[in-house]
Image (cartoon, rainbow, N blue to C red; front, side, top):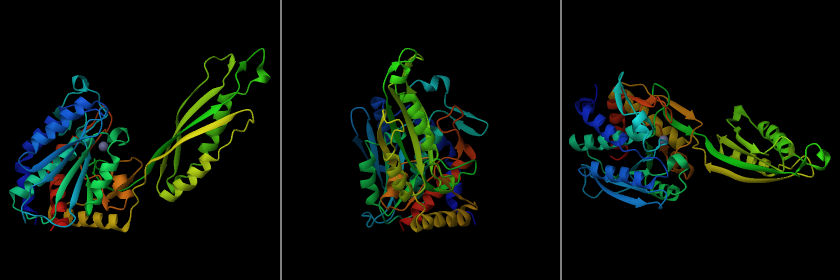
Length: 386
Ligand SMILES: [Zn+2]
């Protein structure tokens, strides 16, 4: 037996599409505080009927986060630790992107900047709460949604608040996109960080005085080979020297060269030993020296028993009420779910849009997965809060 919420949400499909469209048409790149504030204000306006909203200024260069506390059926005063929906209102797309990449409805998909990552997911959660209200499905614990303004640039300004809010809830539902065309949920995310490694050498004329020089470029090249030898794919440990710079002219022995290395780790303890090895790196040429900065930005979201249990619950609801088989996945990409899982709050991620093309020109969500994803979010909240 399909759950009546499916019919209910199917009948509101156009409302959900319109909500996603209004959000996508409000461009909100990270670091553009005015644009972020406009997006925060739009969310507040859009949820007046269903939530008490608060914006929280995260700094003049960042803009506002949004906290929504939903007004749902059930006891007036909810008690106990409920559920926190988690997302971000920023995107990677600068203001003006809509001119070349307009919001479109074609080939069964919604296209446009930020639809997949992650305005659809925000819309699903809001629509899910409306469905619980309209169907009078009681909820006994508080349900909130926290939307960060700076996730795409590392969440430095919002992280402490995200963690604080997560700790007040029994579970976090991250409305980031699902994995692949099936929309698998995410029960593990790698930890993410980077190191900036600088080699300092001795400058010299490459023709007149070559032996007096010590090339920082040659030194950084040796370090990159060493760093690359630390990759361990079996452990899910990767190091990518994704940027390199240094020197200036071919006839000068360079005195400075820099590489920035992205790291991904599946387990925190792998990071700890990796960090020790990176910090112990020494220049091979005694006339050169190294400076090393950086480390882990997001801890790994490890698949704890509590996270596995959350996934089992979602999977059972999907099969029983929606006739849908859902799978889980691990990803190398980080989200704010890394932070909430990292401090021990059971977190399930990837509940948002099904589609493809995050951060890419073909960013899009499948229209025929809007209803079931919204229903899953609603039923999961209902189950966890009843
Ligand atoms: Zn995202």
